[in-house]
Image: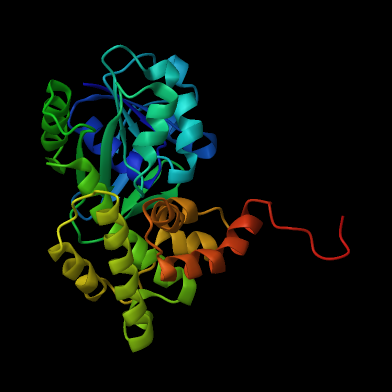
Length: 317
């Protein structure tokens, strides 16, 4: 398959690298020092499942130099999806599909609003990886990376079958979801509960899970996401609540989430896409997620400041 990876970070670099290693025709879109390093030395992936280097690697900062492809893997942050949708237009042909792998539940909708619904799949992934340096991706956790995707109408299609085969050829645990919207909300329950409590307490999982009050808050967050999803008509199974309740105990004590780290370090985060979406959707369906609203309102000043939108202090213009 001819594949373009837009956003060669921890997600795009890892999964795109695996597909390239398996012999697929993969072109990476990157920029700056990352671009220059990949161009000169290839894309290096260090993984507990086996290290490898994609060399030579096709890489550019201009999608128009790649042309139309079979698949676009979208590996940018969730808050970058709208801009990315415009940037990937040169990659889209009559038979191209776009697979977003962001946190949250809105990426496919944002893509469809810009590109039309036809090329857009629903998708999610699980991988703990990051850019360790220019041209260098590190996968650093025992959990096996996975990709889940599907057509937005959940119907079987030739393109999802081909993509499933491509990922499996690359040794990536992959499935086509029976209901992609359910799968997205199930992951949201997991990631937002960890992100929200980690960000508001500013502590790693091993600390807040040991405090009864914050462990109880985690359970409330999980149940709020479940209630909002069900009110929205998303058939998340009730037993998933217990799975997510127990998830913190499976993680390393020092673990933190990307949203938590971004807020702590003053960078723009996925606050809107992870926590804000529960607040907004709850409002739409008549369910008030009280704990989410408290956490969202508490973190919003940091987010606005990171984006240069913080209100001026008294006495300032």
